[in-house]
Length: 341
Ligand code: MG
Image (cartoon, rainbow, N blue to C red; front, top):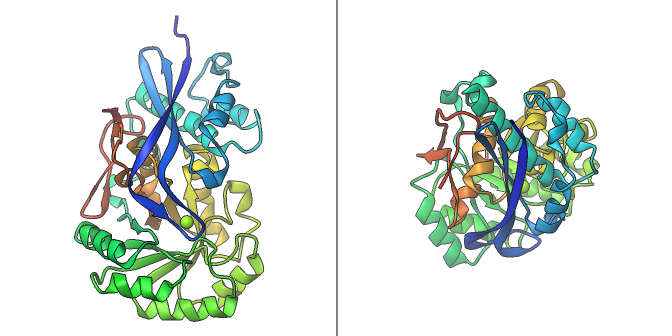
């Protein structure tokens, strides 16, 4: 019999460097690895759980225990299955994403096709990914930037720390690469934020992510209207339903599988974004090549990518999408394009 079997196990990602943003610092990221077995095929999925998002390995496993895929006779009915999963409980977006990714991998493998192929996205059109430089001491920032600047075409810099200008000056002392800025809600005053944006533009910055508090949509709308650079929402936008609420307050959105419940909803968000005036960045948490490869399937359809998550860890247990000279390289494997290492 073709019994559907869902299994999962906790795993801890070890970071190459402590990761510091404006609000906290960490050295590991807990994840839960998921497998859906069906008819000789295995679909792989992952929930990545940085602590500030509120989900834990325990909460993911307790969510997954409630998922009964055995009631579905047609696993290609992805929308129907994921609607059922979404209604099990509110929140739990990373847990939901782990099912979404594993299901996409499984269904793609059953069809013998990669998801970029199913979605008719040209693998040649993948964007360059940014590589993230976190807030750190001058020496570490300099060392990290020097290490990676020849391998990437654009860097992402975390600001919102104590001395943002100094951080940029340190980076500029070792590279001329274009920079994307992520302030992680760190700027409190809109006029000061605008001054900073003008200064950053002079420093070769090409976009600003989440400058102000996620709830300060009025401040963000003002900044977006006056800013010479595109202003992207990250913390202010989680799922498809949030897009309407932030319309006009930002010129772009950062879509992450762990926030939006996975590939199915991310695809819908990407498709509706232009009609709402949004450019799209595809982002990630620290993740293995499983979730990164899943997101990469969508990358030919977006303006910017920040899919460096698997490069930041020392114990990646998947092989999938790679990065070459800063560009995302999709393979031709079916599903999300991964093999377990
Ligand atoms: Mg961000």
